Image (tube, rainbow, N blue to C red; front, side, top):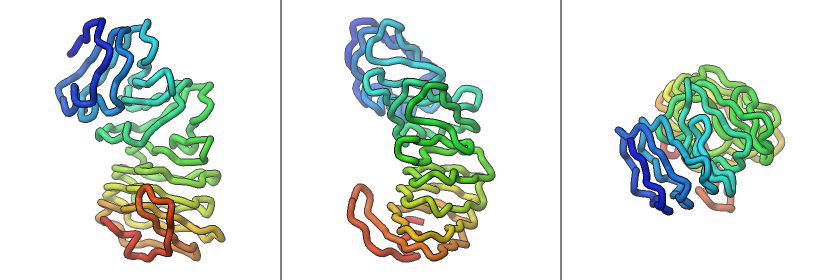
Amino acid sequence: EVIISNGVRFISFDVFQDCPKLGKVEIPKSVCYMSGDVFSGCTNLYDIIIDKENKDYSSKNGVLYDKGDGEILRLQPKNGSVVIPADVEVIDEAVFEDNIVFSKIIVEQGNKRYSVRNGMLYDDKTDTIVRSPNTVEQVTLPSTAKIIGNRAFARCRNISSIVIPQSIKRMGVHVFYECEALERVVFEDGADDMVFDDCIFSGCSRLRTLELGNRNLLGTDYDSSSTYKTSMEYLFKGW
C-alpha cells in the first residue's frame, strides 16, 4: 500500500512499473500529471483512490482516468466485470494488457462514445469492436462493425471458432493474440476489400482452418497507411 503525500505534482512512468505486490494507492489532490503506463505490470493493484478535490484525475469502479481528455489510464475488474464510466472518451487497447481476466463489460448510461454490443466493448464513433471479455466461449460479431481493433480478442483462450461478417473492412494488430483454442475462422463473402494489420493470429497454436471466401485481402505494416495484396502466408505472419 502506498499513500502519496499532498504536494506531489508529477508521477513518472517508472515509479510503480512492475510492482506485482502493490495492492492499493492513494493519490492526493495536488497530482496533475501521471504517465499513461504508470501502473503497468502492477498485476495485483485492486484499488486506486483519488482525492475528490483532484482537478485532473478520477477513479471509479476500478477505472483510473484523466478528467481532461477522458482517457483511461488504468483498468481493474471488479467482481469479474469491467465498468466504463459515463465520462470516459478514450480507451486504448493497452489498458487491457496486464493479463486481467474479466467476464463482463458494462458501459455506464450516458457515455457518448462507447456501448456494449453482443457483450463486447464497442466504439460507436468508428464502428470498432474494441474488446471482448476474455472468458467467452462463443462470439457473434455485431453486423454494424467495420473494424476489429488491435488485440480485441487477445487471450480469449476459450474461443474455438469465429465468423467474420462481411461488414468488417479492417482487422488490427494481434486481434486474436494467444487465442490458444481457436481452430477455425470463417470470413463471409463480401464485395469490399479486407485490410489486415500485422500478426493477427500470433499465438493461435491450434488454428487449422481459415475460410477466406471471395474477399480481396490487403496487408499493411503496423502504423502504415499503404496497403498491398497479401497472401495466406502474410495472415499467418508471427503465428
